[in-house]
Image (cartoon, rainbow, N blue to C red; front, top):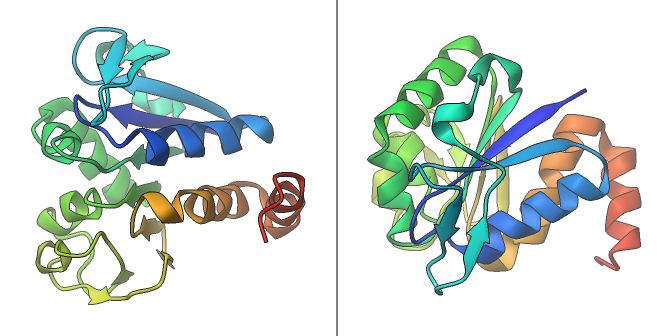
Amino acid sequence: MVKVAIFLATGFEEIEALTVVDLLRRVHVEIDMVSVTGEKKAIGSHNIIVETDKTINQLNFNEYDMLILPGGMPGTLNLEACEVLMSQVDAFYAQGKLLAAICAAPSILGHRHMLEGRLACCYPGFEKDLLGANVSLEPVCVDGKIITSRGMGCAVEFGLKIVEILLGEEVSKDLAGKIIYE
């Protein structure tokens, strides 16, 4: 079974995180919401408190197939400041495992030189942080094992693309129909 972790730091964008969690759980992908704060809760950028499944210190990263980074401010900065998470993002990249980031969070991958020569997108104003990327205005970009997306309004498309990458186009299209997504 596929296993995914999505990381929540203080100031994360709630829609970007929870939409992905919801869509993946609808197709029975095991996804853990993981707090990087040490507490099993995270406060979003709009003061919505989310109880997480785990804290980062409880993870065995070897069990996971994909890491997802939601955006939001200061959530993106707080994710990037988490040394444990950044070392695992580096390890996943080195191992050719799946990474996904939306909104401001693709900047994290850019700062780590993971987007050089790749097609990528982000929230407007963060393009300068996608170091060496071929920046796109598409709502979602996939290049190799990296998925990026532009922001909250693209959260459903981002989640459906993750479903497609993990389980196939048929499953993604079926889910899109069930949630009445164009």
